[in-house]
Image (cartoon, rainbow, N blue to C red; front, top):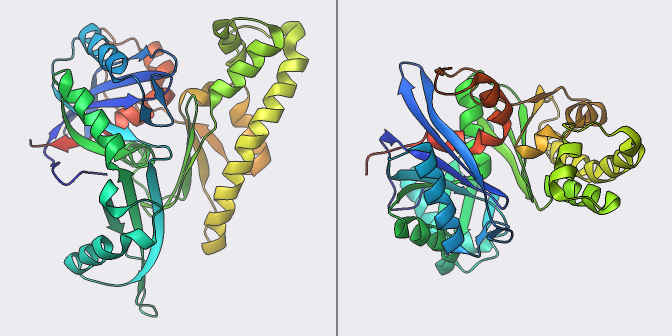
Length: 352
């Protein structure tokens, strides 16, 4: 999503500001692909960001400043994305209109589609152009984001000397980076599992047709493991991703895994069912996992078994150029899935 005063031309630095950490990515565009210039992450203090809301702008600003300094990123133009309760992404059906006519209609009538006061939100929309010779109806993807939430981020970033020029939605940033890697038109469910939320975006023929944010993430799994064995969160995290062998804890961890991940699978199945309800003849080609939660040991296999859809872990850097003398390839492969949204933001451009 782009705010009214935002524009496009040169590559920006992608900043994925999550509830657990901030990820930064800087790319350079080459002929038909990109080169990775810089990337990294930094942990946020507990509660600094929650459900997309900036609760401690000073702490977040300090973390971003430290991260960019450590990475030696000097570029000031940045792109961010948002998710959570403050953002509404809704698909509506309208009669086909010219773009200016559609914009006027959305501005005048959007309030009937969103649960916010129209004066309190930034609006954006995209005509999916699904009309046919037999139908004059088209699907329009409507996005509304609360001004108060957006403005808090913009003020924080400007306060530390950065120039925010793009504001996107997590799911759409993920869609952009996926399609830059795989331009062929597939029917794909993109599932990004963060610390406290899961984003589901199903795309077909290059268009987003189902977009959902679920307030559940991988921190829930870590906390349950930590509480069950009375161990620090760091140890629980290592057990969760299989970095530390479970040994005698395996049976209990399996129960925790099955209980928590069953909730994730249920939400993913709901999204897939919604997709199939309107496109019964277009089966999903695959389910693509990203985010820190994609590293949960055994999750990909479990999802594939439960959904009967092929599952793969997404590495946004797989087709990009890298200099192994500057960025370790093993580190790049390891961090790739959780950098997906930041990388999707880093391919955005601005001429401001």
